Amino acid sequence: MRTPDTPTKGVRYWNRVSGAHSAMERMPGASGMHRIMRTATDLRTAETVLDLGCGAGSFFRPLRETIGDEGHLVGVDIAPAMIARAEARVAREGWANVETRLADATDPNLPPELGSGRFDAAFAMYSISAMPDIAAGVALAHDVLRPGGRLFVADVRFVPGGRAVWLIRLLRGVYRRWAGASGDDIVPYLRDRFDTVTMIDGNGAPTERQPTHWPPLVMLVATKASEQA
Image (cartoon, rainbow, N blue to C red):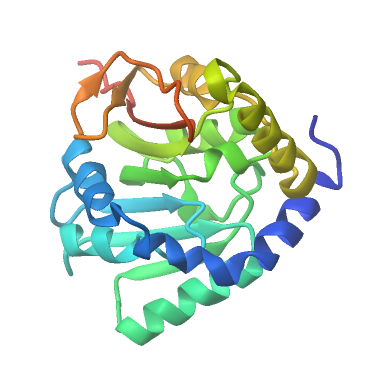
């Protein structure tokens, strides 16, 4: 349950681990993940993109390589230490079309530049499960997209079961205790808000199979309904 202290707890936790966050881009299979997140959303040159829970900006490079100089990328994160590292990365690379915002994606009082219908695509890389209010975070991701916009999600799914049931429960407890996360399964929230939600397998192809192994990771694309004629 979200309490007044919950966002503060999350900020403290993610500030502490900010130094290790950039290691995500050096993880085995990172290049394959980059390919999947771009192809699954049909990301194109000159599109406007939101990185929701951007952390230290680990996914800025592959996204910017696709949208090019003509596109625009905005990274949002709740932790000042994460944003500081992301800003340093942007400055170091000289990316004029990448900006960062310190903001709580579950807070309705967001900066005007994160207003409704601005983005062609959004990416939530291991960030929605860490939110104290998943419904609010998913609502933001939906509302900032243009009609027909795509949200790519790669995340932990807290559905205890199979041989890893106790490991999943342990991980969920860590998220709740230390990061102030809700520990809920993210998929029902996405299906409740978006027009279509498609699971993606390790090759980037649509699948109906639910992740049952350890680690309990899921990839999917959620699409906002197009405007009706």
